[in-house]
Length: 355
Image 1 (cartoon, rainbow, N blue to C red):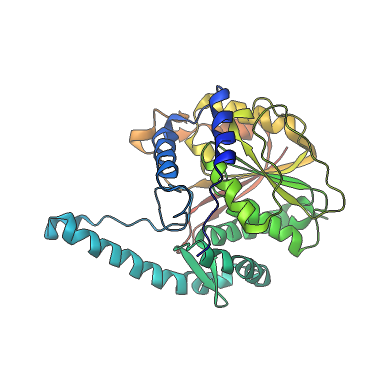
Image 2 (cartoon, rainbow, N blue to C red):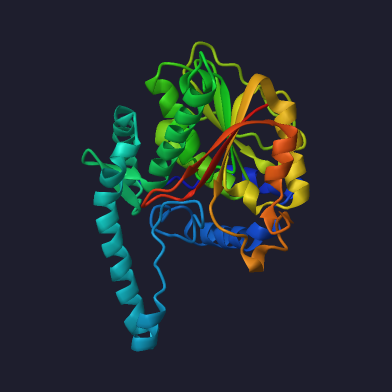
């Protein structure tokens, strides 16, 4: 099997960049980051598709679910761990065949999802990604299917609220996914632009913290070879594309306070604003203002659920609610929001702002 390339020189560049800047991950992510770094040093990126610790909270490797009743019955790890693993894999086998099929009526652009699955099928096999869905007998990682749901929600909110434009038009320019994990959403946007023959000479950025930024860079490079050199310092090279389709580029999050004039037409964030403290939210608000184009939009997918009690002191909470939403409603023009709940997908609310 082809494995995700671990390039020690590139990894050292990301690590040195991280060490240089003062901006670090939020307290919420501290333990996750520590764990991911340990996994990279232990196994490089060899088990990207199967090791849930390597892509904790943002990847598509199956996480073996703990089952208290079975542990109480079988007592020892030697007995209960194989059972937990078997049950998790059995559930995945069921989900991969049913989730998309049962939700296909939700999607208006099935041809695009089939295009996605066609593009990703070989990647799933090469990297042994073990959490995926079957679409027209092709394998599509689960987070790409979730990204497809985001695209459907965006299409609906744009169609319902903005005349004489479309999702394709709004994505026809530079885009960015803030906190985009290993890259499913930004890759989906990139493929969408190609599918609709739009976005020439534009860049689709993914902004992530170290070391997820390194994983995203290596994954996207493996996926399509259209990735530009990462932005790892404030004095980065602004590359101009000539008559090329939209390309991808990773930004390490330490430089959100230094980057200007990226000319972003569409900003996206799923969940990670919920994991930031107040100072970080204000930094990202300023980042959005400094880097928007003359006609820009921001969309946020806010996960359903209350703030975890053991995490409430690590993020921005205002009267039991996430504080960033009120700030964004004051700073930007909320066009509309749409609630989403569908079996097999993350539930939440999509917010759509004009900047």
